[in-house]
Image (cartoon, rainbow, N blue to C red; front, top):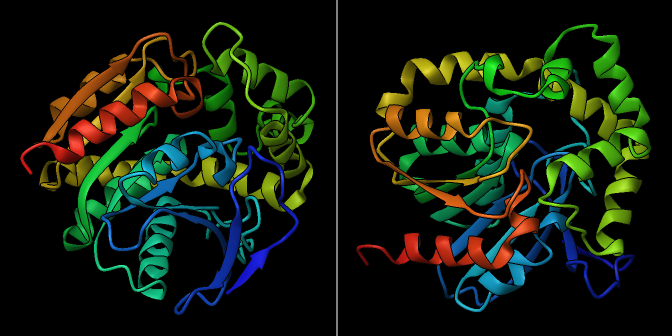
Length: 292
């Protein structure tokens, strides 16, 4: 393991890297809190990296051992070898590989956006590894009717609009994302936004972004067939004013999953963890401590 000394800004998380035992790729992560406490793994969405947890991770670290990771091709993590490798199952397997590498026997997972489905797959396929799941504003089933036109553009093969949106990031597309993704022009620290912008200029990140979306339907179709078997307790958190994914999907998710409940965060858009970190941490803490 080596520490990334390039990140020194106050609003940014201090990061390290580790080489995975099975995948043999380099993964960047941030680690906070006491290792003797229960572990929470934070999984980011797009267009983000682990610094999206700049507010949530420190707050959770008061009572938990907190780890945030960069997905492959994002932030400081190595890209994957092929277009096909960017899929929900591989992302789930990577988290399991990370846990094995770090000798983490069991965790709680907090996942947003594209990370929602990998998190649910881990709970389904390796239930002994996950005590509880908290998932936010993502699409686990093939439900185009609930997704914005931008998200549907990303999922279409050879979509000129989808490719343009990714290639234009962090210009016009980034502005659209932040204006539409947050509640009433909420802003994030410039250091964090700069990190996202740097990522957006990376060809690795652009390829990872588009590849994952265009492979997304594979995991969604599979999970819809087996979702009723997921017994891990799930808290579904949703921003009340999410303009990328219709809140109706949140209600459908808790109807399909056998052990799920819903918490809607008021005055929040798609990026709940950056829009309303205090409310999110409160909801997460309540859910974790429930029945303990």
